Amino acid sequence: MPQNINQPSNQIRLTNVSLVRLKKGKKRFEIACYKNKVLEYRSGVETDLDNVLQIHSVFLSVSKGQTAPSQDLAKAFGPKVPLDEIIMEILNKGEMQVGEKERHAQLERVHNEVIDIVAGKLVDPKSKRVYTTGMIEKALDQLSSQGGAAHKDEAAAAAAHGHGNAAPMNGEAGKEKTKEMPTWTGVVTTKSAKSQALEAMKALIAWQPIPVTRARMKVRLTCPTGILKQAAKPAAKKERQENGAEGEAEKVTGTVKDRILSYVEQVESQDTVGQEWEVVGYVEPGAFKGLSEFIGGETKGKGRLEVLDMAATHEGE
Image 1 (cartoon, rainbow, N blue to C red):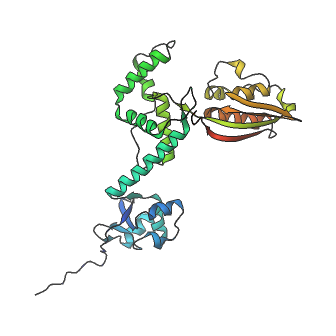
Image 2 (image 1 turned 90 degrees about the horizontal axis):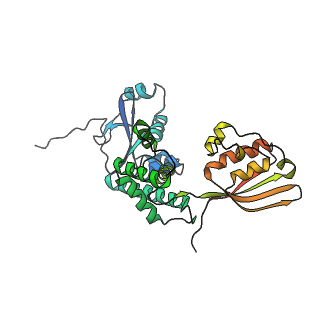
């Protein structure tokens, strides 16, 4: 005799879904979404919840088909919070659960984006030419595969060959210095490609598996000629430290023009037209903020700083 299997009223079976999970009020809540729609919603491409959700419900467990009781939702999110607001909070703040294939594809996509960003921002210090993405990828693989011991050996070698005049670091001081140096362990999907590219660049510059430096910024700066000969205010201690000029007073004093040119690593051209002086040149990314603040403060808004190229590089012969 056939028997009817009764499914509980709060149990809904769903398959082939992407889950977004949020823990709140000691409970874990989940929503079932269409694949790829969560990222589109978070980036603002998709705004219609009906196109994101497979079903307009909040679950305690999607895999078990168990929907969240209203009392649990009220206790965690508030007694008068509408369901749509609860769903949007889970969508925006929750952790996305993806399958193995989707996770691999997402990791590969972020990895390629990180490599492209780094390859466009770093150059050979001597030639100022960019490296290929393959060379950058190999250098990062070298950093991620090497352990702390290898890093320490490289640091010692760099100190011996590149900083021969520096006193060797022994004991706790040496350990602390090594510990502070940035490291690279590989790409993850929980951080943006941009932030990971910045971490990768810091590690490459610190450890130098290949000779690299940040590509310089190409800028155009204009300033009234009447201001150029005025005496510049001495740089603050913090500014001198940020621009590597601590203890070198001659670089942070003099006229406004002297101070401006001290920020410019290489001048491409400079000219005076009427009552306005213009210089085009290259500055280190780390010096740009100080230059911008100096121009704004010393010229009281009369000077202008324009970025012509965020990462000026040479592409080849």
